[in-house]
Length: 148
Image 1 (cartoon, one colour):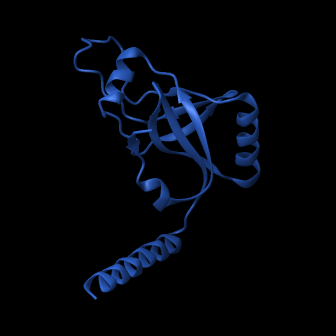
Image 2 (cartoon, helix red, strand yellow):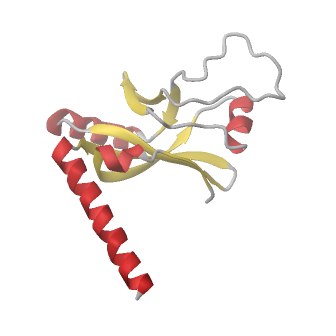
């Protein structure tokens, strides 16, 4: 499963609890653009419209060899294919505990494009500082072992 795009800020800004997989509804030229690596999840999030989930604010530029597409929005919402029972479960979690849905990565599974997203809880500023401190301590320990 080759990974196409990763949301690097997700693990830094959120404490990720449960991971889920969803299919993406894309047009043909969007699929080609994504498979060539032209996708950015920076600032993207998963929203709810009625009883469906949508990937919002993910930037997919138009495929350069497809020609002009009238009215194309690179950051428009894209529908996620998730089972209805999973959607109800997720929406219940979000309503009760104040959690949010964060896209983690987009990858291919056989010939399909899949989105991995997670239920997350936002970190406070001091949590982020603790994460940075742990990463620095780990780096220093690895350097010490390597130089020894």
